[in-house]
Length: 159
Image (cartoon, rainbow, N blue to C red; front, side):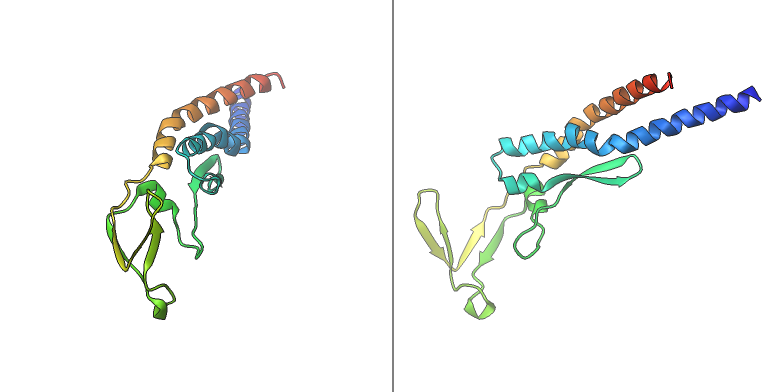
């Protein structure tokens, strides 16, 4: 009989701890990982639009993920390009018949306007701030969960 009561109390304590983690996981992930990644992106000099595209989402019981969802004007995903980069490629003017322009136009690093029908983009290696940030800051999240849960359970012992 007393073994059954002990088992029930342990199950109850475990369930309370799980609920505590579930109720706080989004806040902890946001503070320990998401905000740290946002600080990294700020330090890179990227725009507030990019920074605000990095969010925390609850994905299940005791689960939350850091999400990077940056979209272009036609709802095309841009986040993948900033995170992982892209290979060198050619860019061609679409032409007026296709709803574009007959020539490409840009301002170079010296402030001179340039025109061309076709250019070779050198590619971009990507920033990898999501991958690096999650790997770098996840251990701190783990420590935070352990500390917060331990403190919670100490308080709960007296209830």
